[in-house]
Length: 419
Image (cartoon, rainbow, N blue to C red):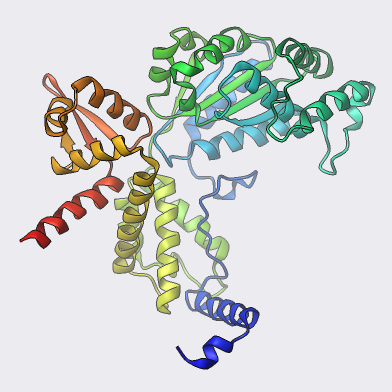
């Protein structure tokens, strides 16, 4: 290493590197990288398609305002845009002056859920952006502030000295006295598959009555098997979530539109069409990403990052394929790190069968009981890392592309080195 490199001021180094990145971005005819994985937050200019789903949601909201409440499940594969759709509902409901709360299915007891819900109601709906209580609720200010302080004093939002009976009374006060009859309380729950576990049975039983309360409308978002998974634990959930909104992949036209909208937002004035992507590069992205918005966005972002590092002026098919390969490997390794040792052993065994096998074959290979293998496979399937396919009397489990890219390549390299 050169002595000058060692003595270089770190702040100056960062400034120089940032300046180089800016110049490289301009060579690609972009001001910024417009591909972000974060859900849309009230800005709908990047929201593509979903006309059918939006119509279903509009019908549900419209009917709920006149007393005909039908809670709904929004289901689709990972990265299909469920979180973004929940965000659209959130801001649409806010504009109509409804109370709206966004939650993740991380709280597993009724008490924890009620506390999380009540904290969200007060913080997101009764306070202004400046953190003061809205003048609309001045007559209830003493009681609201008292409840909020009790909740806010505990970082984990599960204060010990706040019994469930009192929580329910306070929530009833907020929903039936403070809220009034002219607005809904809309609850948006993301990652709702987390509730589809036996340890959440008490919470699901609580939902049986809670989801029938007047003025409450709930949207659960989860995997394509969300309702099947929930009803296995608690069959009555089928009646509590009568509406199911399926989110299919984007059409090819919508996929092209998604890329174009984001590029146009960040291109310099001289840029045209899909620059810096060549038409062939865009075609590859649309074909290979199967209409999954997150895959499209991640691929475009990674391709731009590679283009910046290489100092390119355009991104062609080869750069896109390089980005896809890199993403497949990195995502696959992230999944492996997320699995338990037993689950990791099973997916590696699945890879040894070229990524497709039955419970019986895996049990024989690993010398485990079929019941143990089946339980682990069900858990991995619920996480979306493997798929199922029926062929005659057999059910085959199949590795996701992300895991397959990592594990089958590992097997190939291992065999190659052993020869």
